[in-house]
Amino acid sequence: MLKILFVCSGNICRSPTAEGVARHLIEAAGLAGKVTVDSAGTLDYHVGEAPDRRTQRAAAQRGYDLSALRARALVAEDFECFDLLLGMDRGHLGRMQALCPAPYRSRLGLFMQFAVDSGFADEVPDPYHGTAEDFDRVLDMCEYGARRLLESVAPHA
Image (cartoon, rainbow, N blue to C red; front, side):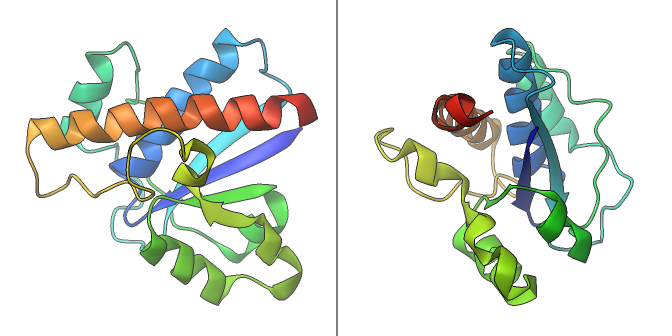
């Protein structure tokens, strides 16, 4: 089983969006039982909370239900347990690199590294202080990035 962890700051906007989209695509592709996903935040100030209501609204408009997800913080065990730990931006990646034991550093990367052909930036911007359009843009990036990620890892699952 291939295990992927998406990481953002508080685990209420970007990383749960990536998780929800990836879960949906995994199920649709028949990869359930071969690929599993989760999400976490580099900070612990939203632990136990559902994704931001704007995140949920944008996702629901495209058929993704994020309501069962709950924020959690990145923990030391994640570096050993997950095969890929993908930061939504360079700040998240830097925090993961600082915390990650040396033997597991090759498992770290940026989520959008799998979608370099997308025309999107290589970092998923934080929509928290933005508009509804910003949440839609994050969703666009997560849909494209998750598709390309699964295309990349599916042969190895």
